[in-house]
Length: 394
View 1 (cartoon, helix red, strand yellow):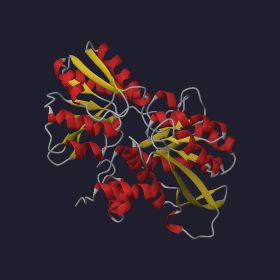
View 2: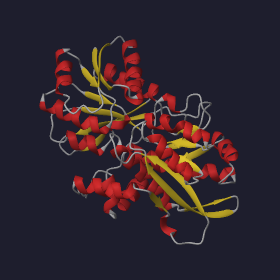
View 3: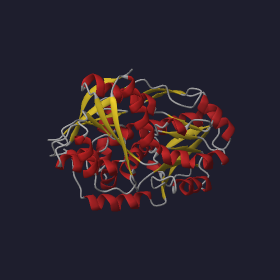
């Protein structure tokens, strides 16, 4: 049974969890030397909900394996979790915090703009960073220190455009993106490029940061006689868009990318006359042992349950956060050192690791994982849960 706890408590617990957080796992107090792994994620800001869910996956993996042998030495793994607060303006300071705490490797972040803003900090410190769900091509472009285990937005944009054209037979798409946001504008552009290549037409608008009322945009979309709505936005904006769409009977399917795979979205959609489809990295049920394990772990701790949005549904980013932890340990083991950053970087490039949940992870010449499949989910607005719609490749 899924348990629900109040939203206010969720926020308070999340703040407590991420404020200067360091976790040492099930063998806390041991005499083992400590290996620090940086967890660079948003706990607050527009993408705080997604960042907390991704971090839960890493924390559960750490709970399962809190120690690791590197170079013949057994280490106690300590997760050093910092809140980058979602934005490019605040991310560099959070990255500096990790550098100052002598982490061996960095995991994260949810949110491509935050990753790109912090990239030079990690580069200058000689650190390797492994993203779990930051999908914009700019995260890895032109550098040899930032990697990722997820698919990219050009692929995701093609999948969504194909869904719009081939499943919904859409001729016109209304596209709404956040001004100046690398992820939002980037994925919108990749979608529009593919959709127009299919012969579709696009009505494109952007909204400024801090927008709280999307009713005008819904009216604009309806007036345009669009067949589908596409909005790659933060979870915070997603909930507001859903509220406006439900209140004004939007009358068209809403499509979005991986950031909408969130309990925030299902909660906002429940009881409303909306149809929402998203692309994501994992469908609950794909790895039953993982699902049951993390659900039991979350239900046993109100802090974990709060950071998952108050229930035990498994998000795609949680699965990615889980696998990226084991990728990080595998890299350090093969490097044979927790301090030799050149060896860690070389081991990263040579990665060929079977993720426990998401499958084989290898990096191409850009540091991107070879991913050729996305899951498409649809919201059941009666139950407020995601349902599997399709597993789709190109």
